[in-house]
Length: 555
Image 1 (cartoon, rainbow, N blue to C red):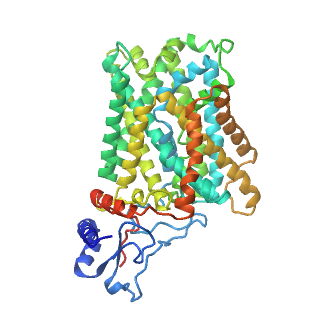
Image 2: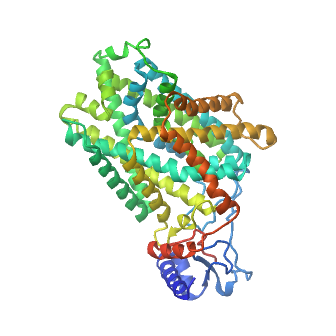
Image 3: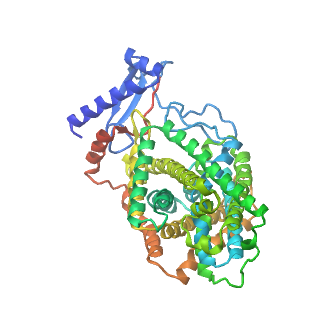
């Protein structure tokens, strides 16, 4: 690194830290109680590339006279399975503050997104039967519950955050864990973001073109604009992003309440004709269609494993993790059942199958002059879901990069706003590419196919560790039949669509997963680094005003 680059970065960090540090720390910095130490590549840093800011007491001595060192924050051991808390001065990490109520809220809030507003029509189209579609909706809820219960055992056995990444590392070692982080960061989370933003765009555009289908180009343009807006919110401020999430989650619950109350009103009036004919005999579903119908339903349930990503932040995880799952997932299943009954109390099967914005059609049929409330409420709901998705995805990218599995720059945070801006921008760019490439149905299939490969892998990890680690502490232990059932269903969901109707998307997904090994071997296992990456990293640091997450204060 050139001296000019060093001087520029040093000036940036000094001014940024002085401007944004806590008042007490800033006073000590200006008074000389904290001496800034700049660590460059190959000069004592454990990272290669970029610039690390470290603070230590005056003359690099702590207040007790010993040499200044980084602390691990093990202030309160608490539950013996909880592990240590994050360093108290690290602005990126959070302390344990997710209780039972917050755990249930996290599961319910992430599961109820755009799926229930978009998926019913696709599910009916693939099954051709009201009865079979209801069975699949309930089966999806049961499968999500069984999978989450198995995850509860894994999460209480290994309380590290990262969910599948940590479990694969325990059971299989580095390569499978890397492949999960590789696919999740580069495919799963961005595709989820793209799906939700396309849903948002359909609901936002449809009221203005009610006489015909909204132009595909316009829908994609609105989806891209929404991604840019959400990116700006999340890069600007963590507090702003969380406030937006809270407000839009409330609107989501209002939308669910409107649908359920409207359906109940119609049922009271005796409008039950669409529910009295299950049409099992008329179903045209094949094994492959049922599998892809499961994809559509499971997309609406996705998020059942999100609590495992924050296990390190859960209070008493051995108790609250399984309890949150047992309460949250049945609650969501009940909501979905009521919403589907309400749809059929107002619309016919053909109307649902022909509509790509089911909730908007519901509002047009029931609410009269107030029909505009439905697309507005659902648009707000999907926007909030997209905001939460990017918020989580940025942290997942940040965690994987911090472990050396992606570019270092993706784990850096803004020096003043403390947001993982590079990771957020990276995810948004991939999501935009997916929006421009695919439609909602193809993206849902692609997402579900890839996700269930890893869900099945997590079940296999649980089974393997029952034999390889029989004496490991398991505060919560599921019957061994549960992971076997979920593993078999996962294999069916992966294999059946390929056999029934092969598509290039499935080949792309499988090739991308295995292609991760071509990155893992040279860049992770053998530690090869491209010679120009240091300069790119430093340039992006200066442009984005970001620093490595080892930033801390010691005094």
